[in-house]
Image (cartoon, rainbow, N blue to C red; front, side, top):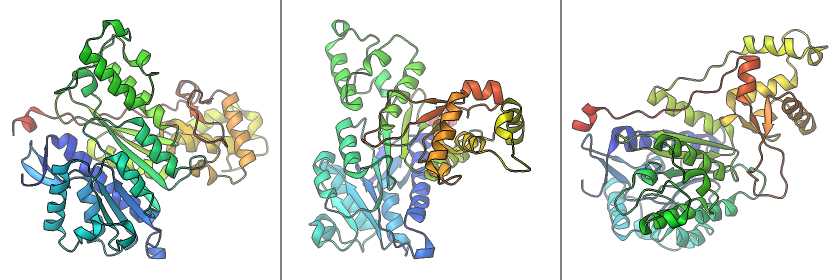
Length: 426
């Protein structure tokens, strides 16, 4: 295994690594400005938990690149990445030492000493930071990152205050683009336990908890940043239901900073489940990520039928169609269809990029969204307040109404590839 960190799961870690590899390359190709401007836009991939850069997959007995390794590979093996910065942060002494060994072996031209040194004296565009994530934030503030992905990939969970601190330093206005997060959550551990982590209790009554359960609850308080989750998750329900509730609650936390959240599920072993939460304020990146996942896992592609739904829409709202001729569609319909087809989770607001493509007139867009809300197709999101003073109403599709009235059904839930007995025995 050499310097690789040992993990299991072709349906977990390996699949996760492949999706990150493809997404990093796609994301950089777009945010750098592409070939048309010679990839001049400054970009950065920030690995908040870089580990060693390599992963040993126990199931298949192979060494592959981890996410940090893929980020470094993109930087070193594509001749156009002159304006791409890679920041690898790792607090564990052993992992950090192995990371440097992997770099020296795979990419010997990287000046490791310079990459470790002061930001102001680093001309390599690769930064190696041996510090805790909280301790590394100050150094990050001194690097001109540009459009950036931050990958939070801890052993089990992140304190919310770290995620919040990085978001505050980057996203300073209403769903400003240019920053994306990917956040790892080992969902099933909270309900099955692992090593020193006791499963969460099935009641929110503290007097009924063991000392070990109390410690787990405190760790979950740090994960969510408050105690509001307790009454929702500390309940006596089947584990699958509690895992789903946890996923949705954590997603709602991230919606404070991001317009779109896509939780991708992975199952490295039987009964194990974790999620990667892709967080973005730009619709195309989220759609492509979903497409990557669907293609590799065999989940059904979402293909709602437009003509059939529009005919029903016409019958229901004839007044809206007065004066509309030929293939012209009213703004209300075009916006609704964009939300159905391209807005992850059916969530939207007047500044969504894909809606702005339809109309640059914010007033008309706001009126159309309000009309869709009045007719029941959308409902305003309450209880998840964005983090800026200047805000716009946020909406989500009422799939019950769109299904019953327009025969537009919601996308099927994403399902992970389950490991087979053959995989586990190899």
